[in-house]
Structures are given as C-alpha cells and as structure tokens.
Length: 271
Image 1 (cartoon, rainbow, N blue to C red):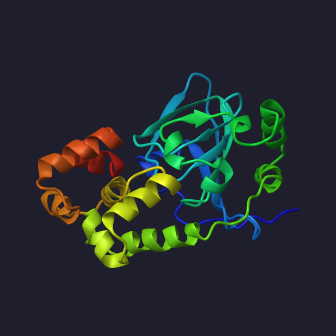
Image 2 (cartoon, rainbow, N blue to C red):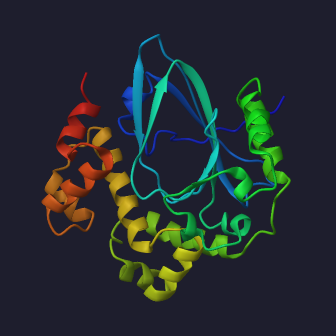
C-alpha cells in the first residue's frame, strides 16, 4: 500500500475554511521524487451530504496550472484570474494535480498564458483517451489509489525538467519572503531582473503577470488573517498590501472573496 505524505495548511485559498471543514474533507499530498520537479502537490476533496443539502464552495486560486479528475468534468485548468465556485451535493470526490509554477510549460509546449482562464480536455495536451483516463483515477478505492493512478498517467508523459522552473521558484520565494513587495519594480530590484524580463518570463511560463501574482498573494494573505480573526484594522491592512486607500482594497477583496473584508472577518469567526 502506498503511504501518502500530507502537506500542511491545506485550507489556504478556501473561503471560510472553518465552515468548509464541516462539509468536506480536503487533503494535499506530496508527489513521489520523480514527479517532484513538475508537481507541487496532489489535492483531494471528498464529501457526503444529506439529501437536499447543497453547499457552494468558493476557492481563491493562485498561479498554478491544475489537472483535475472529476466525474464527467475532468480537465486541465489554466491559471484562473478570478475566484472559482464548486457546488457540492450528494457524495463525491475530486482529485487534482497542482503543477509547480512554470513546470507545465514543458508539457504544453506553448506559452502558458495561452490557456489562462481556459480549460482543456486532457487529450489536448496528453496522448490519451479522456474517458478511460478519468475512469482509471476515479475508480480507485481510496486516496492512495487515486494518487497512484494519476501519478502513473503523468509518468507516461514526463518531459525533461526545465531549469527555468527553479529560477521561477526563486523569484516567487522572494515575493513570499518579502511582505513589503507590492510593486513589480520592487521585485525587479530584489531579483536583479528587469521588469520587462520578469513580465515576459511570467507570461511564457506561469500564465499571469508579476503584478497579478503579487496582488493575489497579498489578498490571500489578507483573507488568511481575517479568517483567523486578526484584529488588524482594515486601513492598516490595506496600507500593508500597497493599496492607495482602504476603499480600493475593499473593492478588490469583495470581488475576489464575495464579501467585504469586514463582513468576511465576522462570518469566518461567528460562533
């Protein structure tokens, strides 16, 4: 039996994670060593709801490409610049492969921005039968079986690792490590790479601009803080995120999360 290694903090990007935990099980698992140059993690959502109960879950995607195995809806998802909602009812499960930023470029053999906000059948990128591949994963008995089947599928198409992926990982780590970076020019100053070169690299390999990635990271940080009940003032939070004023922060936050930040903090921490 395959032993899966879980990834900590599986609720990042889940709107109102405390409420979601009551409805579905969310797991993230690390890939085997041979897949690690390409795959950040596998994620799995499973649920069983009573008859008549429907739950709509919103998630806030970052800059990863996902290959999602879902009954009748299996597909490759490019970077999604908005939020994503999924309706859960009855019982079911979904398995996703979250690729390392930049790593899907070698599979796609094209500029990754070409699939931003798009979804493709597996056969558009991989030499496979879509229905048969879906069944091989969805018919597995448990989490380990689903991950093993998805891993076997991916292994048949592994390209040569691209050194640009590690370069991109280093750049993204700079964004993670330096909360004061709110502008692309600041990222350029930290990395020694010009703004123009950063823009071209991200367009080709990630599918989103450096500006978008910085802003999405900061908004996810804000959502995490508010979901945890942080007492930080919204004006201070907006300033930390690099917004001109609180009103612009509120507009962007509500567009992404579905609620103004003040309402979101209250709803996530209601007892």
